[in-house]
Length: 140
Image 1 (cartoon, helix red, strand yellow):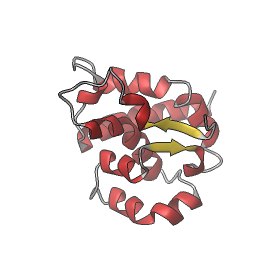
Image 2 (cartoon, one colour):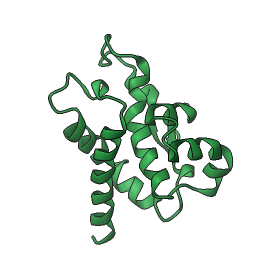
Image 3 (cartoon, rainbow, N blue to C red):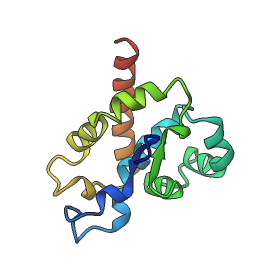
Image 4 (spheres, rainbow, N blue to C red):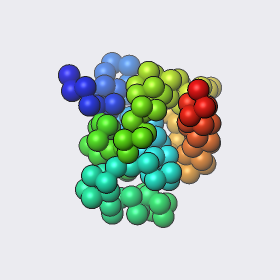
């Protein structure tokens, strides 16, 4: 197990994944988080060097969170983040709190978290949740 990996989409393709949902829906929660990272300029220089075009496309809302996560092959690792953000990512995403917030915020009343719509409205809702968690983390 690579300790640098924060999340891997392959973890979600098991028997729990709903048959009626497109497989790319498994990327959404990851893309939402990475989108927040991009919109707040918290990504590493290495990420910018390798994925600069995708960053620009995301900033212009030309690609959705799912597409953003797919460009990473469904793997989020710590090298994508600025050094100053890594402790927050460990504390928030790595602890499972991010996924809990995502499910509570966006998939309440849906069959699963994989039924959440890949929309800018949902991204904007979750962006506020993540930002609030980040602000609370900074002051803790």
